[in-house]
Image (cartoon, rainbow, N blue to C red; front, side, top):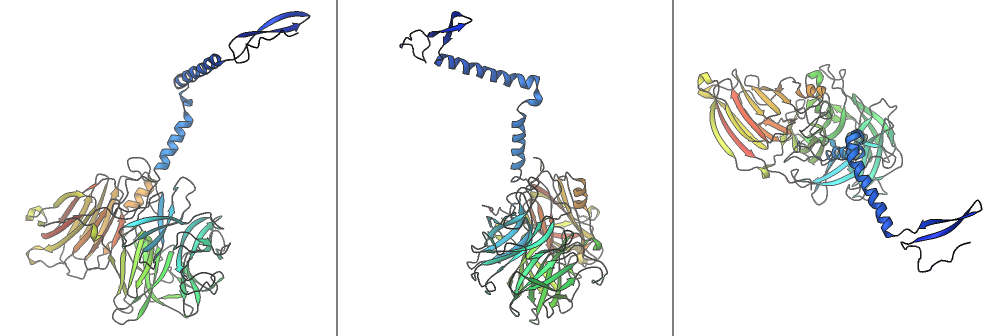
Length: 581
């Protein structure tokens, strides 16, 4: 039987109570306690002491368990932060804001005069499967850029990760269900390893794209076939779309009357059997068909640009072109052998915009698959933020039928040039009162070096001049032979973690023709940025573009000659383009 309760002592008070418990016929009283605030404070205080003791004892007696989860999370966070951090970032070239970039997709100008450019970006490079997607930027002058963002994401619609393609406007009204200001994109995606072509459209100027159909419009015959990088253009004569597709050592040509169903109409072979020298150009990529007017005759010449491998010619991978015409099926037929558009090792995945009938504008990814994707470090760890655009190149046609060549001229960022340092010195062997010109400057320079032989000696006699750009972790040499008019390029860097990447990067190739006429005095122009160099000989119509992986913000410039020469130099710092907002 329960005792009468004292209602002045309710639960929550700190007073003891008694209860009667019957056990084996006996009656005994059991003390119980009601839990109050003081008890709870005591319990939580004890738990806090235990937690603190564990924090002290675990690192001492079990260091392997000490906040291992937190350390792993911090390490992962630090690694991901490297996706947007790099000491290779450029000062006046556009630099990819996150992860890795490569091929340039399309360049176009909108009705307001703003230029748009899309490239392949992998924002989670070496973190999440290495898949790329289409990323857009805009520019008014190809010097100052603004990031727009991802235009076509990977794993959207029925496609997976993105590869190269092209965009064309619907200005001809080919797609009747779309507005004439809409844009249409054709691109390759790797679907379970097989290369397939997809089509999507944009109603907002290329900011976003929607699948035009929910399936691939073309598929490679199997997972081993090269079947990618569609360049699509409109044929006004036949009111159809023409697709030029990279297929190994061939550019396949396809026609469509509705933008979805394509049929094969022919191909352009680019291999050892089809080329006069009997040497192939390896894997063909990124075909792009444009036209240029012969300024002398007014006749239109078709130019097929493409990426290829020049190793059989002792040349690096690069961008090439062929001059030719279209047959009745609008298949490209070359009239001349392939030539390099840029002589350097790092002008690849290029794209082209027709400015007018006489000029083409081109930009490219400054990179090379032989080494740019290998492990690099910048003193803070492995670099996952890599890739910049070249400066813009303006292309024109020179020569005559059967001997045409595309002249290449850099669009210089002249608005960023600072006050110039000018001077003249005599260089040459010390035994003949010559000296080596040396000067240390920032690594963001426009340089001009004019060479004139002393004592009336004609250019073309024996001898050479050499430019060296030396940094604490990298170097570049351009060695020009006065007699042949050719030059050699060599470079080194300490920034590779990968031995094969280092070897490929440092590989030397065959001498390059400067493009100068015999007896022409050489004037060398150089544009140096943090991780690139572009140079050319004045009046040559040729450019050499390459990367240089250095974190050093200063460069020691040295110019030397084997014979007495007058060197006239102009050096100017190049300011930041303050881009990538």
